[in-house]
Length: 197
Image 1 (cartoon, rainbow, N blue to C red):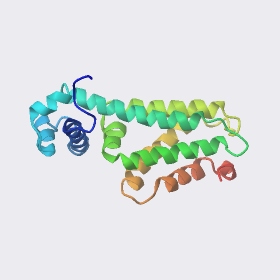
Image 2: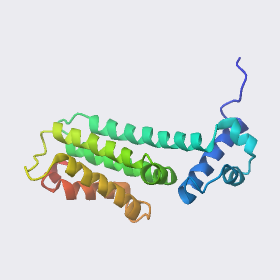
Image 3: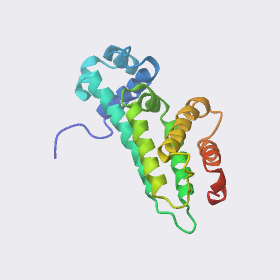
Image 4: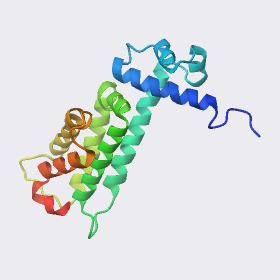
Protein backbone atom coordinates (compact mmCIF):
# COMPACT_ATOMS: atom_id res chain seq x y z
CA UNK A 1 0.00 0.00 0.00
CA UNK A 2 1.48 3.39 -0.99
CA UNK A 3 2.45 5.75 1.76
CA UNK A 4 0.95 9.20 1.99
CA UNK A 5 -1.98 11.05 3.39
CA UNK A 6 -5.46 9.64 3.14
CA UNK A 7 -8.05 11.69 1.27
CA UNK A 8 -9.91 12.70 4.41
CA UNK A 9 -6.81 13.22 6.52
CA UNK A 10 -5.99 16.42 8.35
CA UNK A 11 -3.48 17.14 5.55
CA UNK A 12 -6.23 17.31 2.96
CA UNK A 13 -8.27 19.49 5.29
CA UNK A 14 -5.28 21.82 5.68
CA UNK A 15 -4.84 22.06 1.92
CA UNK A 16 -8.53 22.76 1.41
CA UNK A 17 -8.48 25.43 4.11
CA UNK A 18 -5.42 27.08 2.55
CA UNK A 19 -7.17 27.13 -0.83
CA UNK A 20 -10.35 28.61 0.63
CA UNK A 21 -8.47 31.35 2.47
CA UNK A 22 -6.26 32.08 -0.53
CA UNK A 23 -9.30 32.47 -2.81
CA UNK A 24 -10.98 34.77 -0.31
CA UNK A 25 -7.87 36.92 0.24
CA UNK A 26 -6.92 37.14 -3.45
CA UNK A 27 -10.49 38.15 -4.22
CA UNK A 28 -10.70 40.74 -1.45
CA UNK A 29 -7.17 42.19 -1.44
CA UNK A 30 -5.84 41.31 -4.89
CA UNK A 31 -2.90 39.17 -5.87
CA UNK A 32 -0.12 41.64 -5.06
CA UNK A 33 -1.51 42.66 -1.68
CA UNK A 34 -1.97 39.07 -0.52
CA UNK A 35 1.06 37.45 1.05
CA UNK A 36 1.65 33.82 1.93
CA UNK A 37 1.85 34.90 5.56
CA UNK A 38 -1.70 36.34 5.23
CA UNK A 39 -3.01 33.08 3.81
CA UNK A 40 -1.48 30.87 6.51
CA UNK A 41 -2.54 33.27 9.26
CA UNK A 42 -6.15 33.26 8.00
CA UNK A 43 -6.04 29.44 7.86
CA UNK A 44 -4.40 29.27 11.30
CA UNK A 45 -1.57 27.19 9.82
CA UNK A 46 2.16 27.62 9.28
CA UNK A 47 4.23 28.61 6.25
CA UNK A 48 5.91 25.18 6.12
CA UNK A 49 2.42 23.69 5.82
CA UNK A 50 1.72 25.99 2.86
CA UNK A 51 4.86 24.75 1.11
CA UNK A 52 3.83 21.13 1.61
CA UNK A 53 1.03 21.74 -0.90
CA UNK A 54 2.03 24.73 -3.02
CA UNK A 55 5.30 25.68 -4.66
CA UNK A 56 4.67 29.43 -4.41
CA UNK A 57 1.97 32.08 -4.21
CA UNK A 58 2.19 32.47 -7.99
CA UNK A 59 1.72 28.75 -8.66
CA UNK A 60 -1.26 28.66 -6.29
CA UNK A 61 -2.83 31.66 -8.05
CA UNK A 62 -2.25 30.10 -11.49
CA UNK A 63 -3.85 26.86 -10.29
CA UNK A 64 -6.91 28.81 -9.13
CA UNK A 65 -7.23 30.56 -12.51
CA UNK A 66 -6.87 27.25 -14.29
CA UNK A 67 -9.51 25.69 -12.02
CA UNK A 68 -11.91 28.54 -12.77
CA UNK A 69 -11.24 28.40 -16.50
CA UNK A 70 -11.67 24.62 -16.72
CA UNK A 71 -14.93 24.65 -14.76
CA UNK A 72 -16.29 27.63 -16.69
CA UNK A 73 -15.57 26.24 -20.15
CA UNK A 74 -16.85 22.82 -19.21
CA UNK A 75 -20.22 24.47 -18.54
CA UNK A 76 -20.09 26.57 -21.71
CA UNK A 77 -19.15 23.70 -24.00
CA UNK A 78 -21.47 21.12 -22.43
CA UNK A 79 -24.53 23.32 -22.81
CA UNK A 80 -23.73 24.86 -26.20
CA UNK A 81 -22.74 21.51 -27.72
CA UNK A 82 -26.17 20.00 -27.04
CA UNK A 83 -27.88 19.41 -30.35
CA UNK A 84 -31.17 21.22 -30.81
CA UNK A 85 -34.14 18.85 -31.06
CA UNK A 86 -37.93 18.95 -31.27
CA UNK A 87 -38.24 19.78 -27.57
CA UNK A 88 -34.91 21.59 -27.08
CA UNK A 89 -34.05 24.62 -29.20
CA UNK A 90 -30.66 26.25 -29.60
CA UNK A 91 -31.96 29.25 -27.65
CA UNK A 92 -32.92 26.86 -24.86
CA UNK A 93 -29.29 25.66 -24.86
CA UNK A 94 -28.09 29.25 -24.54
CA UNK A 95 -30.50 29.87 -21.68
CA UNK A 96 -29.38 26.68 -19.93
CA UNK A 97 -25.72 27.64 -20.39
CA UNK A 98 -26.44 31.06 -18.85
CA UNK A 99 -28.32 29.52 -15.91
CA UNK A 100 -25.43 27.13 -15.27
CA UNK A 101 -22.81 29.88 -15.62
CA UNK A 102 -24.65 32.18 -13.21
CA UNK A 103 -25.21 29.27 -10.79
CA UNK A 104 -21.49 28.44 -10.89
CA UNK A 105 -20.60 32.11 -10.36
CA UNK A 106 -23.00 32.42 -7.41
CA UNK A 107 -21.58 29.29 -5.77
CA UNK A 108 -17.98 30.39 -6.36
CA UNK A 109 -18.16 34.13 -5.79
CA UNK A 110 -14.52 34.68 -4.76
CA UNK A 111 -13.08 32.39 -7.44
CA UNK A 112 -15.27 34.09 -10.07
CA UNK A 113 -14.07 37.50 -8.97
CA UNK A 114 -10.49 36.34 -9.46
CA UNK A 115 -10.98 34.39 -12.70
CA UNK A 116 -13.57 36.50 -14.51
CA UNK A 117 -12.56 39.98 -13.33
CA UNK A 118 -9.21 40.42 -11.57
CA UNK A 119 -6.71 38.09 -13.20
CA UNK A 120 -4.57 38.90 -16.23
CA UNK A 121 -6.30 35.96 -17.93
CA UNK A 122 -9.81 37.37 -17.36
CA UNK A 123 -9.98 39.19 -20.69
CA UNK A 124 -8.84 36.15 -22.65
CA UNK A 125 -11.38 33.99 -20.80
CA UNK A 126 -14.17 36.39 -21.81
CA UNK A 127 -12.85 36.55 -25.37
CA UNK A 128 -12.84 32.72 -25.61
CA UNK A 129 -16.39 32.71 -24.25
CA UNK A 130 -17.49 35.25 -26.88
CA UNK A 131 -15.80 33.26 -29.66
CA UNK A 132 -17.44 29.99 -28.53
CA UNK A 133 -20.81 31.71 -28.45
CA UNK A 134 -20.18 33.40 -31.81
CA UNK A 135 -19.23 30.08 -33.42
CA UNK A 136 -22.40 28.43 -32.18
CA UNK A 137 -24.56 31.37 -33.26
CA UNK A 138 -23.08 31.22 -36.77
CA UNK A 139 -23.63 27.46 -37.01
CA UNK A 140 -27.23 27.72 -35.92
CA UNK A 141 -30.14 28.04 -38.33
CA UNK A 142 -32.75 29.21 -35.78
CA UNK A 143 -31.41 32.72 -35.48
CA UNK A 144 -31.28 35.07 -38.43
CA UNK A 145 -29.00 38.07 -38.04
CA UNK A 146 -29.62 41.21 -40.02
CA UNK A 147 -26.79 42.28 -42.27
CA UNK A 148 -26.31 45.31 -40.00
CA UNK A 149 -24.99 43.32 -37.02
CA UNK A 150 -21.97 41.07 -36.86
CA UNK A 151 -22.41 37.81 -34.98
CA UNK A 152 -19.20 38.41 -32.98
CA UNK A 153 -20.48 41.82 -31.83
CA UNK A 154 -23.74 40.17 -30.77
CA UNK A 155 -21.78 37.53 -28.80
CA UNK A 156 -19.65 40.26 -27.20
CA UNK A 157 -22.83 42.03 -26.06
CA UNK A 158 -24.08 38.85 -24.37
CA UNK A 159 -20.71 38.37 -22.64
CA UNK A 160 -20.83 42.02 -21.55
CA UNK A 161 -24.30 41.49 -20.11
CA UNK A 162 -23.09 38.41 -18.20
CA UNK A 163 -20.10 40.32 -16.89
CA UNK A 164 -22.10 43.35 -15.72
CA UNK A 165 -25.12 41.50 -14.36
CA UNK A 166 -22.92 39.15 -12.35
CA UNK A 167 -21.58 42.15 -10.46
CA UNK A 168 -24.74 44.22 -10.16
CA UNK A 169 -27.48 41.61 -9.78
CA UNK A 170 -26.04 38.17 -9.00
CA UNK A 171 -23.38 39.02 -6.42
CA UNK A 172 -25.73 41.52 -4.77
CA UNK A 173 -28.46 38.83 -4.72
CA UNK A 174 -30.96 41.04 -6.55
CA UNK A 175 -31.64 38.27 -9.07
CA UNK A 176 -31.35 34.49 -9.16
CA UNK A 177 -29.40 32.71 -11.93
CA UNK A 178 -32.61 31.60 -13.67
CA UNK A 179 -33.98 35.15 -13.67
CA UNK A 180 -30.80 36.60 -15.13
CA UNK A 181 -30.63 33.96 -17.85
CA UNK A 182 -34.28 34.65 -18.71
CA UNK A 183 -33.61 38.40 -18.81
CA UNK A 184 -30.69 38.02 -21.21
CA UNK A 185 -32.55 35.63 -23.48
CA UNK A 186 -35.59 37.92 -23.55
CA UNK A 187 -33.47 40.96 -24.37
CA UNK A 188 -31.19 39.44 -26.99
CA UNK A 189 -33.50 36.83 -28.49
CA UNK A 190 -36.86 38.57 -28.07
CA UNK A 191 -38.17 37.51 -31.49
CA UNK A 192 -37.27 33.91 -30.67
CA UNK A 193 -38.69 34.02 -27.12
CA UNK A 194 -41.35 31.37 -27.67
CA UNK A 195 -38.65 28.82 -28.51
CA UNK A 196 -37.17 29.12 -25.04
CA UNK A 197 -40.26 28.26 -23.05
